[in-house]
Length: 214
Ligand code: C5P
Image 1 (tube, rainbow, N blue to C red):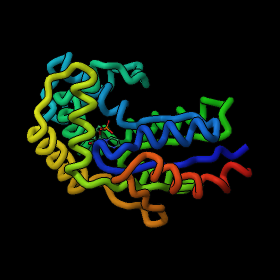
Image 2: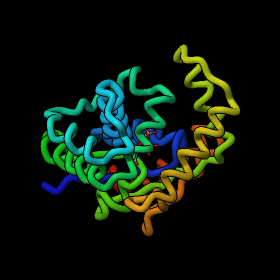
Image 3: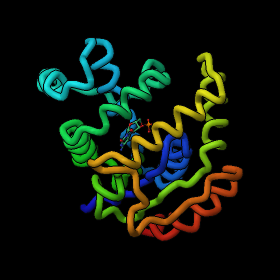
Image 4: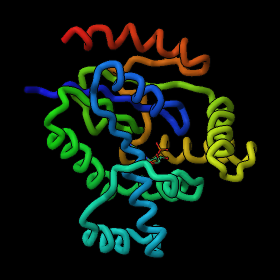
């Protein structure tokens, strides 16, 4: 049976995860946050003191990794890991490796008929033939405010202007990189997530209605 794929792309802290979790719960689909994979890899490089400017060092290390965790642990949610993840995400070698992990995840999770996958390039590159593509839009100031609150709530020290600066920097890196930059996929529906979550779910419900009937 062909698996149903819903892709959710958007910039840092745009609410992709909350939206993806909402949809996967409604449809009983499996959720995959592809950012976790970039973050887990970033964590491995940090722990092993890999020079991330050196692609050969990265390749050597990656050849000896036998498993990447798909778990969103607290240690990978830090600002330091966010920065390293966006730096290693520029390498095609890294992206190809992570894209394969995503395809295997879908193939191997046999008990699910559908998947919600979020990231930056899911609808534009990784799952180009997805059944439904979403692109989440939120102003950078609102994203920074939400991320600031998230970090404070989780007990991390945080300064709003610094968060805003980091978000803009990551946006710039994600949008301007050569391989798989963050773009609005051609056939994507734009979701305005600037307002309340209720407002967002109204937009989502209309779109997932047809999928629900399948
Ligand atoms: O989504 P999250 O903030 O957890 O992603 C961490 C970093 O991984 C992003 O800043 C981005 O550079 C990179 N990433 C990516 N493509 C994806 C998911 C994440 O380039 N599909």
